[in-house]
Each structure stands twice: as C-alpha cells, then as structure tokens.
Length: 473
Image 1: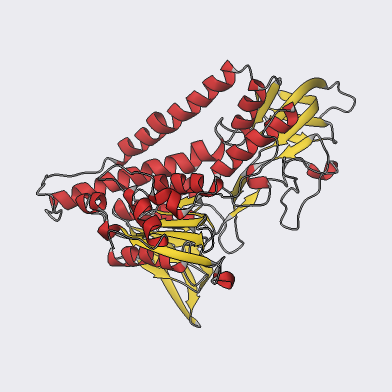
Image 2 (image 1 turned 90 degrees about the vertical axis):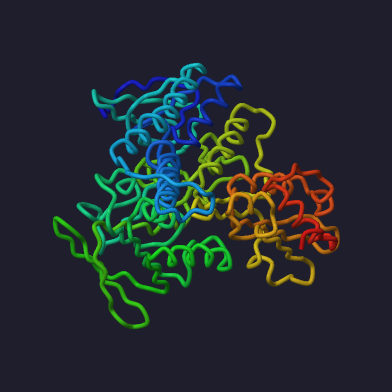
C-alpha cells in the first residue's frame, strides 16, 4: 500500500465468496445495494471448491464402488452380479472437479454477474473502520466502504507435532490424493475425519482413526456415533478413542503415528496421515487489529442478532462468528445481514433450530434439543424412537440400520428436537427443522399424511410413539 493513495468509494463490500459471502452479495444486490466481493482464491469458497461439495462427490463414488464390489462378489441380496469392477481414480477425480465443483462454482459466477456484483481477486486487509486495502497480483486498491460483511470462513487447525506437508495432510489434501491409499490414518474422528475416512474405506482403504474424546463424531450423542463406529470396525478398520496422538515420522513412502491409549504407547503406519482436529476462524489475517471490532477469546467476532459488530457498519457471518461452523448457517446469516444493511424485513435472526448432518456410511442428522441437552429436565420432556427396521421403504432398500428420535414437551407435545441415524437422514432432517421452527406438535406430525412406502413415514411413526398411539411398533 502506498501512503497517501486515493481510495475508491464503494457501497457494500463482502470479504469472501463462500456460501456466506456469495449469498450475502446476491441478496444485498436484490435489495438494491451495489456490491463488491473480494475473494483471494476461487469463487465458492472452501465449501464448493475444497470442502462440502467435493467431499460428498467422493462419498458418492465410494458408495457406488463398494456396492459394485458387493455385486461382483455376489454378496448382495438383490440377485445382481457383475464382473471386472475397477476404479479409475483419475476419472473419478476429474468428474469431481469438472462436473461437480466447476458446474457449481460456474453457476455462482453467473449469478454474481447477473446481479452486477463486482468481483475483485485479491486479499483484503482493514486499514481502519472504513477502509480496506486489497492486495492483487498487479498491485493494490484502497476501498472506502459504507458497509462491509466479513465472510472469510475458516481453515484447518495445524498442531505442532503434525505440520502439514508431504504425507501429513489436511482435509484439502485428502480430497486430491494421487491414489487411493491402502491405509489412511486419521487423527481426529469428528465429522470431517469420519466422512473422509468413510469415503476412502468404501474406496478400498483400511482406516485407522485416533480420537481424543471417548467417542467419534463429537456433536452427535454416543448412541448415534456408536452405530457408525460399529460399522467401521465391522469393515476391518480401527478406531481408538480416548487416545492422545503424540508424534509422526514420515518417509517418501509412508508415515508412522505414535499415540497413547490407556497409558501405553502404540504406533500405526499408513500411506498418509490426515490431521482433522477442527478448524480455526480466518479472523487473524484481515487486519482487524486496525479496527475497533471486538473478538472473543477464541478469535471469533462478536455480533448481535443482525450480525453487526460493535462497529455498526461492519458485519460478520459464518465461521468467523460464534456457533457451529456450517455452510448453511453462513448462508442463513448472510441473508439476515444483507437485509439489515438494506433496511429490509427479516433483518433479525429469530431461528431456533440449526440442523447438522454427518455424511458417514450411515448418515447422522440432528436438529434442536438432544438427549444430553434435556437430561436435567426429563420430567418435562419425552424422548420417542422408531427403528428403520420397521419401515417398509428401508426394508425394501435393504438399509434398516438406525432409528429416528423425537424430543417433545410433555405438556403440549411440541417438538423441540430430533435426531436421525439411517438412510436418507440428511434429507429427512429438513422436515423436522421446519416442524421445530413452526412450533408443531407430535400430533400435528402424526396427522400429516405421508406417502407410502417412504422413509418419511418414520417421522409419522415416531410422532405416533410420542403421541402414545403407535401403529407399527
């Protein structure tokens, strides 16, 4: 930056073009704002380019491949058989990148162009409360803004004993491995580690997960995560919980992890070591120290219910603010912040339920209250479950693992929480989020006609259990 350089006046600047940033830009443009996006990498952010979307593409490849291998081995119950099943890893990666990622990011670029959003490729840094310096390949640009939305997302946490490089990889590296590893070792059994581990397990890798907590998939209760752990172990992979990863040594061919369980050191050697122990907000890279914006002890930006910071014209959304680091959270907050800046309706976040999903081999989903969150008021709530083993559609799919659970208030029967382990969990949870947001009761749900045979009938059946009048159990 050149001292004394002239700043360009702009209306609204959005820093970052992920599912928070691009949604904020489009909504603000729809509401009449002139919007500029600053993006240092690719439009679409982590989620579309190196996160949610490509990982689900690889999970889908894994499902198809493992099912084909079962048919080749004649282990399927459907009377199907095939021969010479092979995985073309380069073709799978090309499909993921060109047909999935590029299609979605290309669509976002088109939408931004349609809404006349200016996109500047560069790195933004605050000069003060009203000015940004944008470093670009061919120089810099000073922007003097009326409003700004910080949507810079997060990055994988790197811990000292396991610096990323070579065969020690983060989630981004795991999505673009040159080959399917024979053995993938994972430090951290959270959602990202379990999802990527599940994908590679279905693609033929042996998986070893080393997790510091007493169960994998923190954020889901142990009854749910135990179902996944059981399936992983049954497939020949390993899970070590309450384990402390200590060090790693890599060669040009493999990497060996040393960890401790029950006071005893163990080692495991794999082709790659995926370190997936969480993500940190990208708030330390944008010059917030040059502003009056307040941060929490964890480096998150303090905001109100409209996502304004203590500096009224500076807003923040997504992974950089408190709450779960979820793409759909960022997108929802983006619309609230854009409305607040434009002075439109829906400028306050009034939602009460945030769904979360793990795309493991058997999917997990949760929204609202959980058994753990209501354990101190069991006299006022009821927990009801229905097994997929009693659902006709699940039986016809040969996929009956898991259950659907509702948490309701005893007095009125209002649905305040729901969890699903089983087929279609990622899609079914949306209806239950709708029910919670709109204050529906178990009776409201049980009186809603569900088509037959569908997985959705399990929602009705669980509601009937909660209402005390079950038919199918």
